Image 1 (cartoon, rainbow, N blue to C red):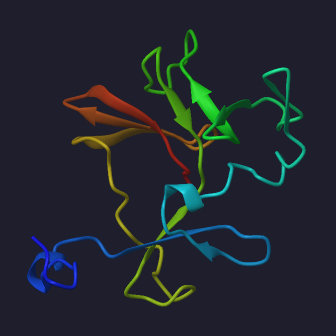
Image 2 (tube, rainbow, N blue to C red):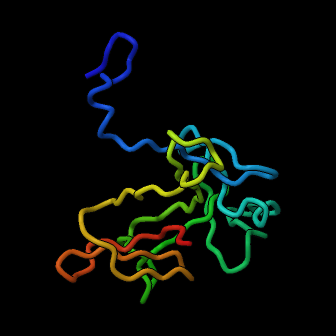
Length: 151
């Protein structure tokens, strides 16, 4: 339900998380308005990437790339022995971003002490910070394996 100003009534907003989404910029962190405003993952390392004969070349070594929506993006795909929680016909576009509490000024104490939303119900199991992998479990079984930025 929305009001005439297209905003949800205040009573409904009280239970919603108060996130501000930002990303690393060249000299300072910058705001994110939507998915399309997130820069290519490791954009500095992928600055020289080009498409030649339909293949992405000169992207960051050891990483997979594809052209999506006319832009070169870093991706993950399921491979034998490492599915990343993806089905065989799916890809994951990799993006980095940070969540902040919008009620606290950027840089303020506790601004990044926020709960991270989960794509499914469950609890955090294995965390592999080296690969940015978080397993979400339900009764001890993996229900979702997600790539995430883990610090």
